[in-house]
Image (cartoon, rainbow over all chains, first blue to last red; front, side, top):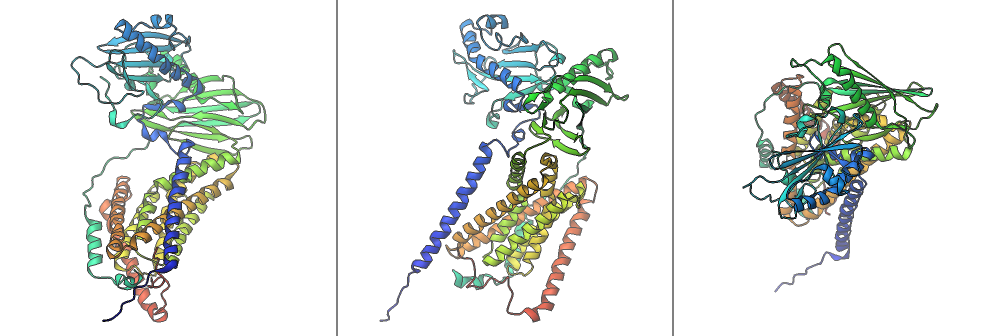
Length: 208
Length: 421
């Protein structure tokens, strides 16, 4: 009976493999680290690529416009509470009377309310025509519409009565050139949609 | 594993045939479409004494958002257009947010002039500034015309008469006309990292390079050849010695992709080819102009720190490409150690990379055809015949030189020297 000797690869082989794996892991971790560092610093990425030509991120706007956008978004929760209490979207003067931003605090904007079907527009026209105008669009579902499956976020809100609605904030660079009226398709009238973060592409609703 | 490598490198007749079949599979019929020049907004800055003059040339098409007053037949209403343009001009001045250091400049005087054919409006802004201040900055953004973005081109002329040009065609940016060296480095490192993230051709080439178990030396030389080609072209472009036209850029991009196709076929037919460094260098030269165009697109951002911008950009691209190559090479080596099937799996990545590269050749060839440079069929015919002649010439040269170099081909992967990680 012959005897067969089996030799293990030895310490050198296992060391080499271990080194290879460590090098590969270091390359991967290093690469991901550099990638994340670049992304987190906000540089190296063209955020406009994620948006349509009529959309913009609030953080790329001038400081004063960013403040107005923040005021509109901050005041929205209170406005929704009023909507739940009254059963309808109140006039801007009512909201201003309650001290709700931006209707109460942005004195340079004259707010008006327009409605078409279940969609309500709050239009803020600036006193300086060279300043931007703002438009807050609140779109509730028409009767018999199926429920919106999108998760709640900046664009999708739930009213106190459980109604799911869409919220859009728009800005017009040339506020003095805006005609006060209901804007069915704001993007076709020179408006730019403003986002805090890029919209979720899976849940892009269409304006009616 | 190393014992099987010698046999593995003996090209079998089915391998080039299979590679060619898979690479060519799925090629599609093409159609032409019309290409028209894009409108741009031009902004000219000139500092002199305690004045900064800004002239904005706006195509009327970029003012669709302003809802300018028009008659039913589409002409502007003369008595209403001036105040409307005044609002636009002041809105643009407001958006520019011109600053001296961190302090905003006072509102400028504004004048507007519409071209007689109503196609353009010139906006003149005159700012009062402190004399000899160079730390001016302004915010720029794109415009919108018929649902498309309109790029803004900025031309800044300093008091010394030097002009720097910038293009803003993405997100709004604040441009400093006298940036610090750290700002310059950060900007160009960012740009170079974008080049890496978007460089599909290089990634495909890297996949083809690691698909075969080449020696460490061969991989090192191939990577160095790619980088050398790219660095030469980027440096020449930055020095202003190389300025290919848009058509030439497209052509070179197409040729770079075609080099990847050739490398994919070479992986199957002749992985030990001594022409690998030459092919990689050619790829570097042909892919270099696209990289250089990214650098030159933002060249104005370098200010007076052009060397820092160039070095920061090139070093970042080089480190990134070496990292990609090392990562893929290391991963492929680990997979190959699992046996013959794993080796074949790694090799097959070259087929997919070659197939993707062929699609890029076709797509870019179609763009060339659209631009009217060539007909698509003529272009593809020329590229194919060109590569065939090159490969034939390489084969003849190899045959003629084989007597002198027999037995010492430096690129041949010897079983004992093959990368086995």
